[in-house]
Length: 154
Image (cartoon, rainbow, N blue to C red; front, top):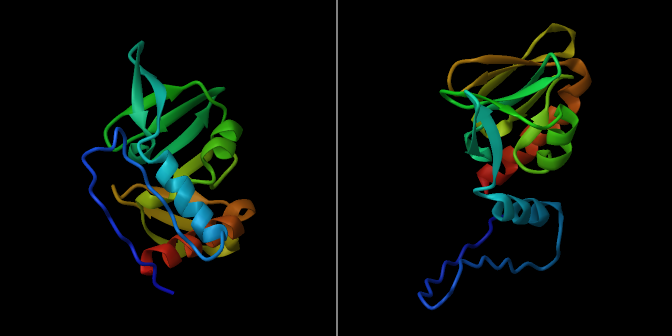
């Protein structure tokens, strides 16, 4: 089912407003709403002792290493003050998904996936980096990937 999109420019608005009209509220509509609400959302990261804001869309993945969590972007690595479980619960409804005990990945930066032996999945990111989705997280990962594909095809 194809969705219609209508954009109305109104210079009198004090801030941008997105309205979604639908026949019924379903998981797809809620997902779109969540994406719009959190578009441009950023978190605080630390690099070389300085704090800065990182747009969530720019983060390829988060990784926990020795009681620290790092956010990896195309060119930089930042330390963030979250636990992997916190990141998954805060951003898992957006475009992030946990793929192992220590990694939460941005599903939008995955270029291709392939199935490996033992039920694991290999994900190749847009920068060529490879990540393994462990068997324990593979089913949920496939479901999120399928949902993403359905949104992109409409």
